[in-house]
Image 1 (tube, one colour):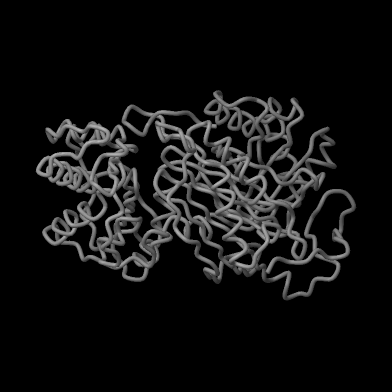
Image 2 (tube, rainbow, N blue to C red):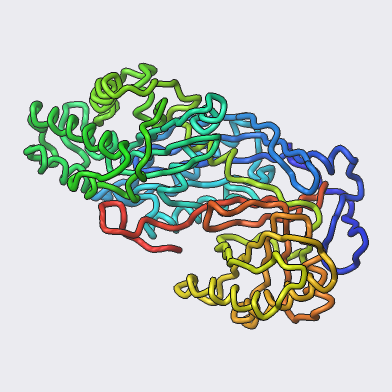
Amino acid sequence: MAFSEPSELTPIGHTGGRIFTSGGRSLVLEDDEIRLVSVGVDIGSSTTHMVLSRIVLERRDNRYLVTSREVTHESDVLLTPYRTGDTAGDTLDGEALREFFDRQYAEAGVSPDEIDTGALIMTGVAVRRANSRIIADVFSQVAGRFVSVSAGDALETQLSAFGSGAASRSEANGNRTMNIDIGGGTSKIAVCGDGEVQAVTAIDVGARILAFDTEGRVTRIEEAARRLAAEAGLELVMGAAPDADGLSRLVELMADHLFAAMQSGPTPRATADLMRLDPLPAGPAPDAISFSGGVAEYVYGRDQRDHGDLGLRLATAIRERVSEWGPELQVAEQGIRATVVGASQYTVQVSGTTIFVEPASLLPLRNVPVLMPRLPLTHEELDADEITVAVKEALQTFDSLPKKQPVALCYRWEGSATFGRLDAFCRGVAAGMAEYTSNGLPLVLVGDGDVGGLVGIHVNEELGLPTSVVSIDGLTLQAFDFIDIGELLAASGAVPVVIKSLVFPATAALGREGAAV
């Protein structure tokens, strides 16, 4: 499934660094087509699961574009395991997670070493720092060569929109499609149009903010449940069965807040207090809606079992409101697995082959923030000093990042690539990034055209800077905050790039506590 390593890699036209590289035993077909094995993993407060996919990318001019995505293995859905004896139920059971993933790889007939790329999405209690360390330890052993670790409501919302098919349906139908992904702890809302995610928000409404044993006694109370119960006039006590009428009021209130969050424009104060992201911007109502996440299985009638939470009750309340609202209810391509399918199939891009990496051992690079300065690149003669000023101004937004963290400068090349224009661009960028490269960090440049190799060579040879260089191209990164750059793919000389966000919620509502990592 993954490419075998060729006997050697032959740089074409350059002896140091890597530019337009092809494998010594690769065929032309292999250079024009890349096949990747990708894994998507979702570890949430309630459930954990994974999906393996095969992705085919074909070279179109200087870019590799995804032409085929195929799910090759869907794992069981595991109730996220917590350590025995942890009365708060907050600490993940790392050994149980490791056994689960080992079993899934075995059932799929795939070794972790065969994984080329992918993403791990963590939500809820999984993002807490102690659990992040547990997960990092687990995945250092079972994830394979190149899997990114990501967390964040905005990213998860985007992935569920793609994985559910809402984005593609908006393009195929030429309409405004909303997807609501309802999980155990949160609901993620995405508005899609023209095949893209145009707006997202998230709210602390989920099936397992309150959980019960087989006798109906409360076994888990999330902070969101306490707040909603107070609003509903319901007393919640661990180990006691709640009042039935009060529980009904709680569920109806949850559905009310969810539908308030689904509306654009001003948000009621009580709903705003539950929001994890900014409300949806003003705009027309959607033409169609779909649901994904665990509760979607109830919404579409695919599951009627009681899993000891509020899922079945919440789905019933949602269906009543959907029929009264007006937009067409569409069936999502994926339900509970929407986010994990999105993670395995929609986070990866592949660079062009006109790239430069010196030394090649620099890769992989992980969790690299993307800097997007407004560079003056339209004139026939470029001004190096103006470029330096633009880069330094943009870097001011990264003041909170440690200077030991590499930064990827993303640019959109315009015009010809003459020696003079390349020289001014490279001198300006190098001077602007000197604060980072002087500390021994590599100069990481990401372009959307096909000049990555020329830029890298110019920095390395003409400027003679004593710094490592990664210069890649053929990528579009404007919608995301962080990237992972994988090792060179043997057959093509390109690199896989996982696009993600590692920003934890950071505002005043329930889910908005934390910091970037």
